[in-house]
Image (cartoon, rainbow, N blue to C red; front, side):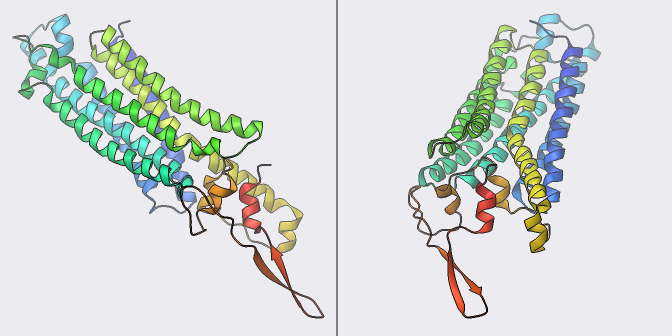
Amino acid sequence: MAYESSEAEHVGYACAALSVLILAIRMFISIWRRELSDLAFFLVVLSMLVIIGRIVANNFYLQFGTANDALHNGIQSSDDEYRLKVGSILVLLARVLLAAGLWLQVCLLLLFYSRITAGIAWANRLTKITWATLGITFIAIVLATFLECRPIRLYWQVEPDPGTCVRAYVQLLLLCVSNIVIDFLVLLIAYPLICLRKRTVSEYVSLYTLFALGSFCIVVTIIRVVLIFNENSSQTTRSLWASVQMFVSCFVANAPTIYGSLRVARRKRSDHRSAADYASGEPLSRPSRFERESWIKMDEELAAKSTTPGVRDGLISPPPPAVIPHHNDDDDVIIPASRSRSSSLIFDAR
């Protein structure tokens, strides 16, 4: 199915607007948490700039056209040759920005999962492998973008025929296959969330929804590749489905953090309205990082790892019970406490 330039433009604007909106919400959450120095905050801001830059480039190259499309439709004048050159150069820029945007979303999701699975040895090793894969594949994609046609002027050459390199199949396959592999690695990192202990139905629904979203990214990537090959790498098809892929990746990468923050905020507000909190006079405070990131109800073994030394290959020995001095009128009595109030807040799923 061939798409018109106007269709690709409209889909691009819609997907870019939704993506920027999601990232803006994530950014305001980071501001509310006072995490302006957090790495995720800078990645969110950079993602917004990348998406905006890409949609600007898309707007111009869809209007100017590209040499790849001209090989099918022909050119009418020398002015068209200049416009095709500018449009073809902007396509190269847009492809790099697309790869950067997709990889930034993977970085955000990887940060989210790595924080809540830290302490599990094999997950830590897999996280390091994924980070290395991100860097290597991004460099490879950038090189393929500019070097698939050599010399580079073949990208905007129409006559004589520059060959099939202008269709950029190598760059497309490298980007999409790398994206699928990385998505699988991220899903493997998140696997401990569902395999350590039996959970309630609602917890399983939340976790499997998270995995379904990650799988949906893979499905969208496969659909994009198939449609582009069917349309002989038509630039409008590539642009439209690149915008869809960018939006889906943005949603999947940021939805867990946004949903978790809203859920924890609602629970905190409910707790502070309780009579016990008013009686204790405890002031309203922002949730700690671990509270914010344990909305999926991590098992106690995973939770203990962040504060308990001696974690070995995901096996965590339970911490000794704390002691709380209790004063009465006669003498001092030492009362053991098996769980602190903050721990019960984190793992209370109701």
